[in-house]
Image (cartoon, rainbow, N blue to C red; front, side, top):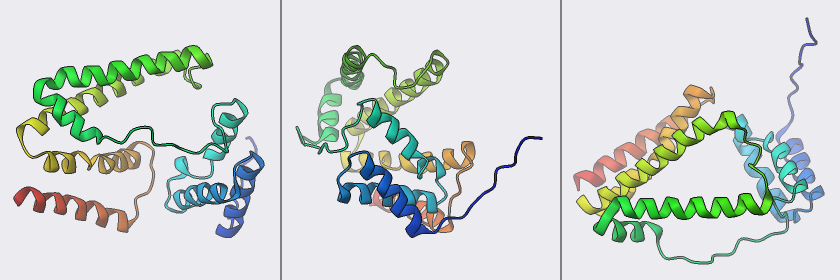
Length: 200
């Protein structure tokens, strides 16, 4: 038998301080490091270990490879209301709107692939599941586009915004991530809210 792994409990403040220090050592500004560390610790506390402090390993790798600039600041290049544009395009042709969107994403991805010469750690065995994910994403956006032409955009968008519930349930089923009682309550409220909106 191999060596057994011993679990060790770490106090929240200690975990937060250590995570923040690791990010600062990578060159992240102190305020940003504390903010990111706090998000990771919150995910850890909520039982979402896959999005917890284990992500620090991945973040460190990204910085070392030059994929992430710790001091970089996001900039809004354009703010035109993506859903409104989807609705406008779908009124003419939903399929062409979604095809154009995904073709643009594909071209940008090819550009990044040529520039950085990396698949981001993916291998050939990941291709089938990536194809399924891409197809599902395309179909979902296509249905959203069609929905905006058949009814109220406000209602279609609210219904579409419920996708995190499906993500949470799949994480529970496939990744065995725990859902707390308050999260079940939140899901119930979200579904109830959509029902009220649809009834109105």
